[in-house]
Length: 476
Image 1: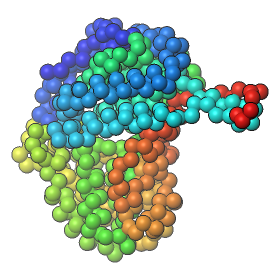
Image 2: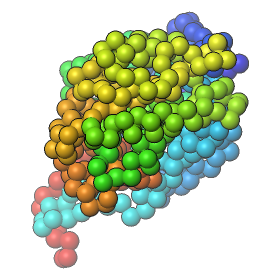
Image 3: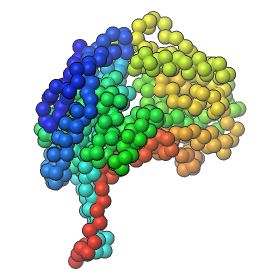
Image 4: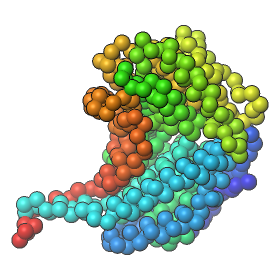
């Protein structure tokens, strides 16, 4: 049993201002994996005050000092890798292998890249007689989700720490334990008091207060578009910077010239990673109408290979995160059939032999049209929709016909795929299931958010630019 009953504020573990404690449900068996305290506005005030006090000195530290601090954080993180993996499995149900092979390593990846980017990053540059100085934006509030908890914590904390910001983190109350251990890592690494603070809580109790706080200079939020709108509304009166990484409904265009078997089977596998609980999942596959029947057969076979089981098994998929999420997915599966889509694989209900926990059958719908609910809404589960198109112009139009624009995928010969990618309204486009690049900027168009995370581009999100005019020319 895990406990997250204290908050990390100003370099110390302290009791919360409230006495509200909730259970954290293990989605693998619907039992209780631990408890977490929910804070309130008084805890936000204490954490933000600590971050504000720490900012004056930390913002003036040298690049070398911050690089050494990141080195210490990376070393401490590596020592706790096994603990982090176990916590992620207990809180959000990731299979043991996925927690160890992906969930934990992606966090260390962001920390390592930030450390590498810090060497040689230009915090000053001259243009004529004006000196451009990039300075840390200030106190940052972070609200992170449950689906890739360490990924979202690390990709915010790492660049903020690298450039000299101070911060207050609110991890998801659904999956709080990995965030709690992350705070222990920061303490062990010797992060100065007040630079990093952690408060547990829910959106109304902590998220809203953090977003509205007048001493917070920037909010960085990852989660649903609906919740992102609320963060922006709360932040608006204080005109703070708001960074949002929100929902997605990413198209995966299989070109007529693509290897259909490889493209469709690869798309099924990519959709099912993390039980479909990824904002950039390729959830809308587009195939030529003339090859729809072939695509159905390939997808059905690929889905049958997506095994579902308990986290300690060798299954590819574990449960989805909660009963609420399970019920939402079931509703949308049923709606897909009701609206006329062809069920190719999976369907409603739990997989055979998995009566406890929140397990979902790997599901594929075909003959989907882009006006159907399952083509419009972000399902956030292992459910793939396959849509047909007549020609590439129509494929591009369908792909862009969404309120989201986080990611897109194109399968086919390199030159053709790249030409299609140039016309897609998405922040990140993957050609032929390219390997993930953590140095590439990550973020979306339209209602998928504002700003970019990952790599050197993330540094800019946490920096203000000051123009000092009348300075000596750079070559003087």
